Length: 454
Image (cartoon, rainbow, N blue to C red; front, top):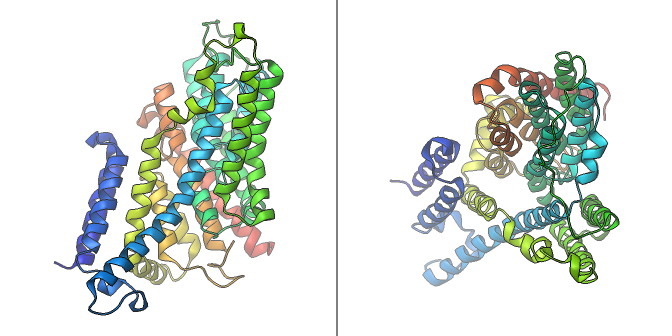
């Protein structure tokens, strides 16, 4: 059997297993690692057609093996920039959370009006998810809702809005979603470009569902009985120190795109700089605490936070991105991209729109990774150029599209677990809202480009 076909079969089977994780009960990280290993092992059976002739001497097996090693290391290096960025960002957010940095958010959100709370939740989630990852933002907002909303049905509707707002907010920021991080790291979008041109479509994709949902809320909230459940408390740090941790962490994340534009270094360098500064500051804070207040402080230091990183997520990204890299190397993605262009007559709105719908069903990371491998970067000013229509729409559609189903994004999955929301309930109450917002955002982007000429 043809090696190319074998690699495609392995990838399709692995992709299906990842999409059906809830039924197979096999962690998607394990499947992704197997995909990575099997794809490249099959690649080694007959690598000659896929290795540039200038990289090895014809007939020399040793030089061929060396060339393949260089190719894999090149792909691994590109993948690692995304992984280190994610690891740094995850650690920063964990440190801020565990040291009570998000506690003030709960106080800002307090209100007795149902509609007022809805808009506060919508905007706070939207802008927070542009700085933090969607997962953390969703967890923080659900914890706040539990302190403010007693009625279970009302809280589930608010939770549905959290999913929409978190995904919409992450789509316009270079650090707001894994997919935008991937596109930014690859140099396909710029921080300034995606913020300026995707901000309004993303905002619209949140505002319309929020408005439609607000029509279902009337009156005031029933006070929640104090059950003792609180957001993570610092315990050891003072209020001023907790605020310093918050501004160092969140402000540092905001600074990363600025750091890249000034130094032209890869984004992961900036994120590790911020982590180093935050790590140093928290070590100084804890070293100066009185002995009577240092109990349990070691659990909240960065050295301990590193142990709390979701390594399975990191390994999933490693496996899936390296498996996609194998497909890219054998030329499958390029051929697929050409096929899509022919099928849709080069209409990038349709291509990215379909990718967005698919991202609500299967993980958007491999979808975006695949799209990145399908198309080469075009000339400046074209649809496929840096900050071109295709790449910006891909960032929007892959991020916002995940809101249409509860299993379509990390934010949706975590909210589903925390609030025990069923797939059917979400589809009945929230899916249509997310879909309307999704289409409105695409229309808004079209107006920006076709009518306003932005």
